[in-house]
Figure 1 (cartoon, rainbow, N blue to C red):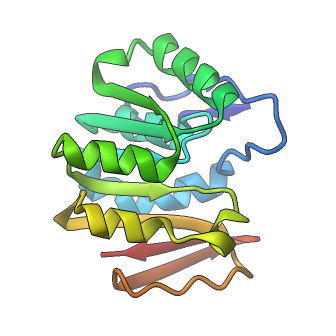
Figure 2 (figure 1 turned 60 degrees about the vertical axis):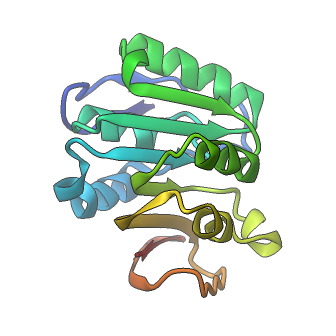
Length: 180
């Protein structure tokens, strides 16, 4: 079961996507992530890329993010995500985009959206094929003092020229790379 850790929705149980392709962020990893992000969340514009169940973005809403944009292209994830947001009555602070990530970022850039925090949790195999940070840089949706966090398998080599990697946090098989 996935639960909200802290804040307004603390303890709320979230629905899971009934598909093994969707791997929610483990609770301990999510706790570690939010220990780092905590000082930046209140009042922020937060992007939850490859959102799945939405547990990361919902945690940000629970801790005071002003707006969370959720992006996912997998319909079962979108369906569960909408149910999770509705259960918490957080629709007024959430925008759910059912679209491929790059296309969604292009759309957001056209709408002049900009984010303080971007958390990306793509399917691990996607990082072998493309770099989701490239479209973020090209479209300019990260605010100047913004932060990007990318979850990857610890053995996946992920090199990037688009942003400066400032920290790597590894827990079990997962690594969180922090970029500015």
